[in-house]
Every structure is written in structure tokens, then in C-alpha cells.
Image (cartoon, rainbow, N blue to C red; front, side, top):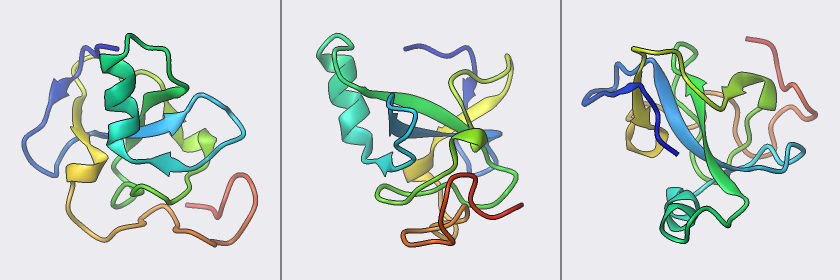
Length: 108
């Protein structure tokens, strides 16, 4: 799926692109390859790109979890986007595996 956002070359992007399941109860971030293979196969997979604002620290990495309340399916026009897996900084800025628990996670 295409986005109208500008791809950023640095870590100063407004949004990080992360791969997640379309299953709303699954808050796990998956390896980019799952979404990339979906694009190659014509969109038949359950894995799609979501976007998370980068103002709260490093985006979650594959295998970590993020509250669905913090992700969006599209970004505002003119916003810059970079793959979360390509951004530096501390891994797990949104909470890692085995974090504080349930849906919604900890406050921000």
C-alpha cells in the first residue's frame, strides 16, 4: 500500500513504519519481511504496514509489542516516514517483551 508521506533519510522522521498483523488483538511487531512478502504476493497476507509517531522514543522492534492505540494505518500528508527497523536509538522505546502487561500498556 502506498503512502503520500515523504520517506526520511535520517532518524528525524515523524512516523516509523512497522509491520503488524491485521488481527486487532495481536499487538506484536513482526519482521519487515512479512509485510514485504505480502506486497510481492499481491496483498494476500494478514501482515500490513502500520505507522507510529516517533515523538515518544525509538519505535518497537520485531518481537516486541505496542498498543494498537498508538498505531495508525495512514499518516498525515507531508509527514516523513522511515522504516522502524532502520531507525537507531534504544530498542523498545514503547515497551518490550514481557512489559507491564495488558492492552494499553503503560502511560506515556
